[in-house]
Image (cartoon, rainbow, N blue to C red; front, side, top):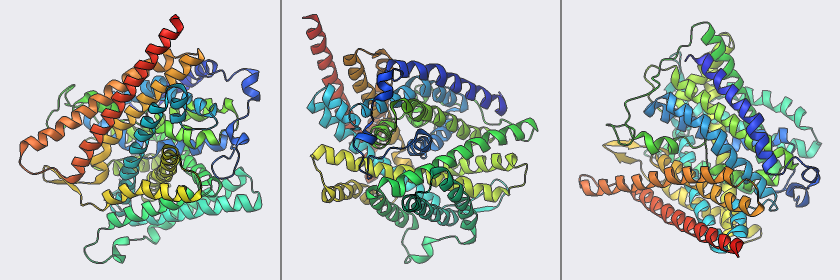
Length: 581
């Protein structure tokens, strides 16, 4: 398969899925009738300007898309393709997005909107019991904590690292830092301008998108090297971690209209631009013979057992690629921020199911960045940036310098993570306040601070060492992030199954995916615990503190998951008895 055919087949499958599977989901959810068309969403009934604020689907889609995407459809597919080959990664992306991830995202959004924009945990409370509600909230909050840890560290590394571009030039991280800071400033200016002058969405984008492109060009001319401002011996990566967490604190408390909506819209259009440029670049480069598929479709990785440095394909493939195929984090976004902005119920199909399929196609672009390499190795963000820069260079017929394209790709990578970082912090604040029954501005400040306390402590720890090699914090926690993500998806699908069953609508659509995700996620967590026990038994060098944290969180997640599944089985038994009587 060449790259042109790869993209053509991927796009065709996803378009057909949106048309037919999306229509089926909308019919099962009851979104096509007159009652649904006249039903008011929480964005209107609870409008407050802070969290509840209606947005048209064309404005909400890029925001939701950028919030759920982040680094997930970049890092996960690239790691999986490097370990297992691009073919198994591609198959999981396509099948997972259509039949598991898309179903998960769509029904989560619909359920949340029909429960006054409350979180998916509230849906669990109303349709299962209060104990399940508290367990689910605790699970979600713990999951969000190390999503923040992993993605803050990924971004800090991108701001510090220097690497070679595809043409042999330098691509310093400080230049990306400058462009990212300018980008956030422009997002704030866009939000304030739209609010103060009543400037329309389209006109605002026409003004601010070109300014963001200028910020990308300006980055290499005035790189912000934080290391030059720090005392000797201080780590620039750790300092950036602290700065990013401080940003998360402020951004999570800012009104929707000031930062989240304009920044999400700008970030979403970055995704669109990269998607279009990737396709055009592959068409131009592939048809001219300048881009050829070089990476292997399969590697030597074992199916069920590790092979040297390669982990087993099953179940690790399914937790390595979370965003792009299926991710429980999407449920938190859909029921946390997106449901509070959905203008009409019918918009759930393009915003939720459509965004999941778009993310799958974006993951295919990440795969393509690996497929053009003979020996894919290195940081995933560097592989992605070099691949996308090559595609953009070909799409412009060589007119755009590859170094500028490389800076654009790295900024896009940082942008995606920004979108998730502050959204994650805001969502964790919602969850903690719901868990503790807190309300009010003062409690919101405290909940945000408590959420960021754990990530701050971990960010200040030295890198963990595995086999004598220092690993960045994001790499240590990526497996745990993926496993918990899929376990959260499984538990969300389980709650949605109960909700649909009680409504008498299509519970079979979520029950099968719930079982699949439950098996692979618990299997993965058990493997992590076994690996940690092996480290302890080896007795060579004591595991790093972060490895103890990883094992402890894995054990906690397994206990919470088994408890929730047991509660669901008991509930199902009671429901059957009630129906029988």
